[in-house]
Every structure is written in C-alpha cells, then in structure tokens.
Amino acid sequence: MKLILLGPPGAGKGTQARLLADEYGILQVSTGDILREAIRDGSPLGQEARPLMEDGRLVADQIVVGIVANQLNAKGSEADWVLDGFPRTVPQAFALEAMLNRRGAVLDAVVSLEVDDSAIAERLSGRRSCPACGLVFHLRWNPPRTVGRCDRNCGPLVFRPDDAPGTLLRRFAEYGLLTAPLMPFYEKRKLLARVDAVGEADVVFERIRSVLGES
Ligand code: AMP
Image (cartoon, rainbow, N blue to C red; front, side):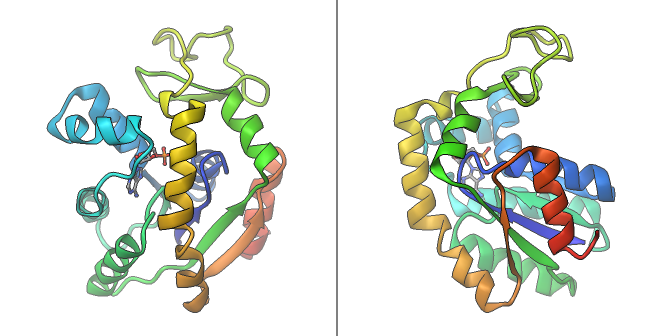
C-alpha cells in the first residue's frame, strides 16, 4: 500500500498517517517531522528550514524531494508507506511520480482529508507538542497523562510556533496557492479519494479504511 495524505494545516494528516502506519505496518514519512527533527539537531538542513518554517513558508522543493527520496531509497522499492505532508506542490508531485516510475512502483491512493474552518481552529488551538521528541497531543482529544508534560518524560509541552495565528495565515495562503492544485492533479489520475475528516480520530480513520476498501 502506497498512500498520500493531503489536507490543509489541522486536517489531521499526522494523526491519520500514524494510525495507518500502525494498522497496516507501513512506513510513515512525515516531511514536517523530519524537518522539525533537523531543527532540533541544529543540522545544516535544520538551519536552512528553520526561518522558512517559522514564517509559515514552504521549504524548497529540491530539499524535500531529496528527503523523501532518501527515506524511500533506504526502505527499498518493495516497502509500503504513507506520506504525510508530501507532496505539497505540483513539482513535488511530478518528482514523486518520476521516482515511482523509476522503481516500477504504483501509488494506490491519495486521501484528501476535508475539514471545515471551525474544526481546524479547534484542532490547532488545542494542539501541544513535545519540542524534544516531537510527540503531539491535543488538550481535549488526546491529552497527556500529566498536564503540560510529555508522556515520554522529556519535559514541558509547547504550542507549535507555526500554529500561532499570524504564521498560520501564511501556511493557509501557501496551501491555497501551492498545495490545493494537487487535488485536480490526482483527480485527473483517478487516485483522489475525498474523506470527511471532521470528527474524532478513530471515526475518521474508519472512513479512510472504508474508502481504501479495507472495512
Ligand atoms: P507539517 O508538519 O506537515 O505541517 O509541516 C510543517 C512545515 O514544514 C510546513 O509549514 C513547511 O514549512 C515545512 N514542510 C513540510 N513538508 C513540506 C513539503 N512537502 N514541502 C515544503 N515544505 C514542507
């Protein structure tokens, strides 16, 4: 199974990708997580990505395509995966298509997580993450065992800086301009499956399973 999860910030891509990876035993590749880890490590990649991410802008196509190519190459062409947060532009989608063609691999589905603005606002305002290990919580739907602390005992949880209202506006603008064109791109290839992503994570997950023909 080779899947892509598409959706605006706050659609639940990370949560659903994790559930899919656990359920089907496939690899989860999250470009956002990889970039945040690079920032935590202070690597050259992190130093390049940091100002863009803090500003709510996308990192250059060439960089993220390289990240995904490394991840997929490391696992070999037989591996199954779910991509969360990639592709985010049409050039990235073409690069992925070329990567798959070279390996003789086929994309099974592109799941578009569809949410309304109020659900997004609720999810993002309650989202808290651990700056040390990257684990993500929600104050209401997935609270940590101890208020304000990571379940892995890393330390205090934080509000993701790029979820702040000003930065978020830019992320939505980038989404509308650069990522939304992926819907017709994959619709044309008869790969797009739209899923109502409003509701609790396990309910949304069942809807995804159902469009994938797995229920
Ligand atoms: P996410 O965790 O998926 O919301 O991504 C957080 C940030 O990482 C985005 O706002 C971008 O700055 C950067 N990023 C993640 N994935 C990509 C991508 N495929 N292309 C460009 N930038 C990305």
